[in-house]
Each structure stands twice: as C-alpha cells, then as structure tokens.
Amino acid sequence: MDIKIQKTATPKEKPADETKLGFGHIFTDHMFVMNYDTGEGWHDARIVPYGEITLSPAAMCLHYGQEIFEGLKAYRTADGSIQLFRPQENFKRMNVSAERMVIPPIDEEFVLKALIELLQVEKDWVPHTDGASLYIRPFIFATDPYVGVRPADHYLFMIILSPSGAYYSTGLNPVKIYVEEKYVRAVRGGTGFAKTAANYAISLKGQDEAHRQEYEQVLWLDGVEQKYIEEVGSMNIFFVIDGEVITPQLTGSVLPGITRKSALELCSKWGMKVSERRITIEEIASAYDAGKLDEVFGTGTAAVISPVGHLKWGDKVMEINGNKIGAVSQRLYDTMTGIQYGKLPDDMGWIVKL
Ligand code: COI
Image 1 (cartoon, helix red, strand yellow):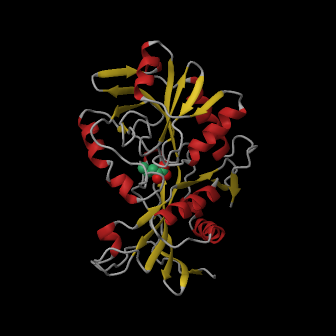
Image 2 (tube, protein in one colour; image 1 turned 90 degrees about the vertical axis):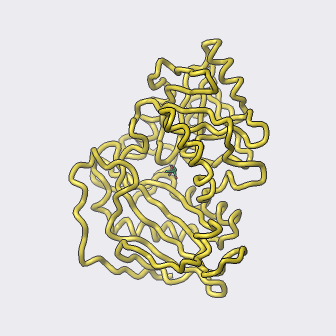
Image 3 (cartoon, rainbow, N blue to C red; image 1 turned 90 degrees about the horizontal axis):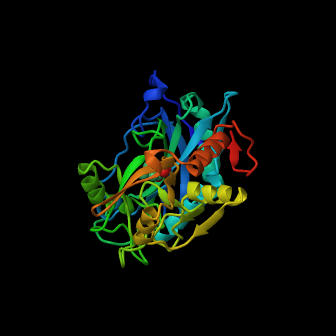
C-alpha cells in the first residue's frame, strides 16, 4: 500500500526548552492515518497535517470503548541520528490486543514502515536533550455510527507524536506507590494483558484516591483474592529481595511490557537470579521487615525504569532503600537508556535505526 503525504503549510514552533517538555501534551505537525472497512481491509494510508478529526456522536468507540493503543519512543543519538527501541514488539503486541478486542489485525511490517516514514517527515521534532524523546502513540478505534453492541465494521488507525520528558514529575527520583485494596484493575479472562483504553479508565478511581494521599500511582493486586501483586498500570513492577530480581508472572491480567521483557533479559544476561512468579503483598512486607527488600522499581516505555521509594500497604509504609535509587535499578536505567540513545553498543539487537 502506498502512503500519501500531505505536508502542513503552517508548521508549529518547536518547544524552546527541551528540559521542560513534560509528558504527552505537545504534538507535532503531522500524523499517520489509515482506514479500515469490512470488505475492503485497511486502506488509504496517509500522512496528513496534525489536526482534529470528525466523528459521529454515535461512533462506537465513544460508547463501548472498542479501542487499542501502543506506546514507544524515538531517540536522538549523539551523532544526530534517530533510532527506535524494539518497535516490532509494539506492533506484535498491538495485534494481540486487537485479537482480544475483536479489532482487525494490522500488517506489522507495513505499520512500522509507515511509522518510519512519519518520523522522516517529523525528524526535527525528535528532542536533542538527554532524557527527552519523541513519544509515539499508535492507536485504533471503532468509528461506526451505531449504538448497538457488536464489533465494528469501520476503524481508524492513527499514529501521533509527542516530544516528551519524564513521565513522572519526579524524574528518576523514587516514586511513592500505594497498594490498592479496594478496587481491582483486571480479572482472569478479562482484558488486563491487552493495551486497551478500558484498563486505564478503570484505574482512574484508585489513582485519584492515591493522589489525595500524595501517592503517585497505585499497585494493583489480583482481581480474585486481592493478594498477588500484578502491576502499576502505567508500568510493570519489579522487586529485588535478597539479591533475587522478581516480577509478577504474566497470568493474563498483567500487561506484557516490552521494557519488562528487556529488563528480564538484561538481568539474566548479567547472571542475576531472575524469577517471574506469583508474589503476594505479604511476602513483600515480610521481606521488608526482615531487611531483605533491597529495591522496588517499575518498568515501562513512558516510565523507563522508575525506582519506588515508598510503598504503602494499609497502615504500613515501607521506605525502600532509604528512598534512593538502588544498584539494580540504576544499572538497568543506565544500560537501557544507554542503548536507546546510542551511547552503548546495541549488543542485544534491539535498535532499529531510521
Ligand atoms: C507507555 O508506557 O508507553 C504507556 O502506554 C503507559 C501510559 C500510561 C503512558
């Protein structure tokens, strides 16, 4: 399929201070769009000026949330070139999410090609500052004007781009996380493993209550017994207990993070003891009481590696590693960002250069 390109006649000013980008509220000049219609498949791939879209008020995505998305980043290296981190994994996961949400699959190779073409058009928007990058948001949603419940026949696939800094306002400083005991994010057989809007909508209530207690995010427990640790919603979670790196196993209600997978691969390569297993919040509290909870950190595309400094479970507040980033988190952060920004050799074969 050909990709038509229509350039804007009114390009925007680029952000003057790349150290103050924040996350996800500045958008570039162009976006990628492609339509799907039953009987025709995906068609009309195009790069057009970034702008508003018109939708019927009856568009099915607005009523029943048939939507999926991805998140990845483009990084600027010291020699000025641009590179992506494991983008094939994002489009592979997008098809897993699509299957769960009864959305037609995409051609993974084609959308990667489309993304690269969009990035060529927008290359000057990729920040030059350390820690900043161009956040990439591919998404698909149902557009049929119909208020009955069924899978749609018409969809839009879009990619928008946002020059961004750290996801958390704390940057690489440890975040405060609160263990959610009232609400749940996902249940067995549900959509927890898919990157779909519903999983994030459902998390807002817990996040809102956490914010009122001055915690940044919530740590979700399993939706059945509310005992086993799952994930944070904006990131997967890792614990270092007595030297062992542990993360909850993928049981269907946890997002299979690409940063999670990369962190596991790096720790294994470094010869660390690594486990993907079910882990209870009681086990974490006991390890803390025994002085064996060395580190807690989150992994995510937006969050990168985010150390957790405080973990609150009921009345118990656990201060981790003196509220400082730990050795494993720091090594992962340095290695991951080193590879992403081209400061370290890509010996894992994770980089796609533009
Ligand atoms: C990402 O890390 O890319 C995500 O999609 C998580 C989102 C909360 C920003």
